[in-house]
Amino acid sequence: MVKPSFNTQQAAEAFSLPYLPPYLAVKEGQTFQHGVNFAFAGATALDAEFFYERNIGPILWTNNSLNVQLSCFRKLKYTLCSNKQACDDLFRKSLFVVGEIGGNDYNYAFFLGGGIKQLQAMVPYVIGAITTASSALIEEGAVELMVPGNLPIGCSAVYLTLFQSPNKADYDRYGCLKEFNVFAMYHNYQLKQALDTLRQKYPHARIIYADYYGAAMRFVHDPLRYRFYGGTLKACCGGGGPYNFNNSARCGHTGSEACENPSVYSNWDGIHLTESAYRNIALALINGSYCTPPLISSPFRD
Image (cartoon, rainbow, N blue to C red):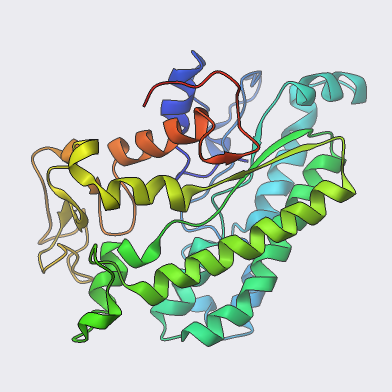
């Protein structure tokens, strides 16, 4: 399972592989020996029922949770391989990317006014959904999985705009909101602990934790080194404001404009990163320095 924030285009290029086709664009008779992307925009780790039970459901962009993506994989499985032995042989040579997932679960709740303590109570449910899906994939034959942590949301233009504070102590030296980054690190710590438990249950599987947070913070800390001359906190595409994020004029909507050169920005639309930023993260993961254990043994240059 591959989510948008792991730049599969750059990863595919690094390994000289074709780009992954999206599951919803699958055509009858099409072959997928190089993989499939099961991502859905706005997808959550938790099922939609969780959010409707807490009066958050009406703002969901999609009901296609991690469980739905897993169901899509199972439907497609036997078009990839004709029997269990063939599937085992194929999956033994495959990398399953489970996420990045969970960020939207928190976004929906935060954007409706949920506090840090309330959201911390959600974390075990989100982590449980991720590890349950990972376990299910291993039971289906996966032996190598990459499970990413969450990004530093306190450095995201949407959070910086919606939760702007007059108190300078709420920001770190780079201009990010400290409490939201601490929350992301809390999620990531809990995920790493859960993956350790999963490794004990499945010692034959190689379960890789991908540190999206650390890979992204490199260019927050030193944007010029990574050629982000437009900065890392302000969105390239948006409707104005200190971080170029305006909820009533979001990127692509009336009143918004895109910058001339997105490659010198790390933030695309206030919520998602630019292709250049995703490329930086992807190469940091591929070369092994932000994966535990390393993804590959021979690092690429970034």
